[in-house]
Length: 261
Image 1 (cartoon, rainbow, N blue to C red):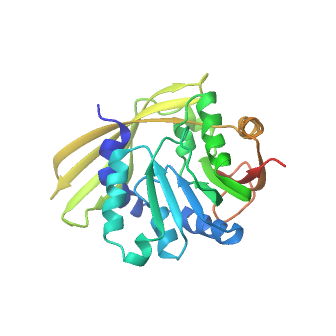
Image 2 (cartoon, one colour):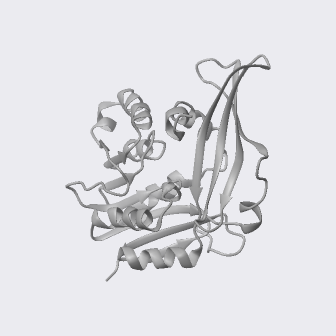
Image 3 (cartoon, helix red, strand yellow):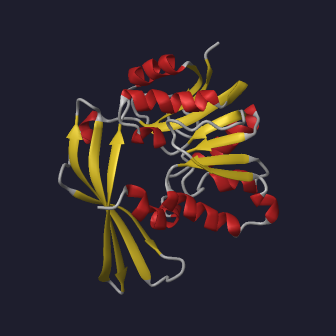
């Protein structure tokens, strides 16, 4: 089976353009404006978050380890105006080990890449990568999902339709993305699943592709311990991108951090 990004990179932008509950881009842009730049996005993927920064006049560097995702990003960059392209630098690198030459007023890890860190060592290493690139007064902002125990352990083996959209280059063609949870590891705190991408024309299935998905989850105390080990401390905490406080109804855990004083 291909890795997650080899398949998903082709569908990523149109899939999440159809997700009307995504509100993260403006939050991260505002963080950068409040705390200053330049900006580094770790695990930048296809540039769903990165490009709006450059389009809004903010210089930003992006790092990702997936050639398939970076290929899509570079295609999109090539279609931008020169002034936008000049604000962007892209690097191939691993979230756990990348070390660049610049320091940044804001480092961001949006849309849950930290949930693709499955061991304690990897989780600490990723946070230390972010801390390494901060200026003395710089901040790290990231989000992870708020775990709900009742849903984490439910639905194993069941297939659930998540997203559906019509392709831009061929509107009669419909793509549906479903997810099937395959297993849960309660000790290691991660689950394994499969994405199923099915393409239809005139209601007839013409293509099906699968990609493996694996995600860890964090409790709040777990994150607090990671922050200590990585030399970070929270500046702000939110339960959603509208900056509501974190509570038992939250869907997200969103943090703005700085290096420990």
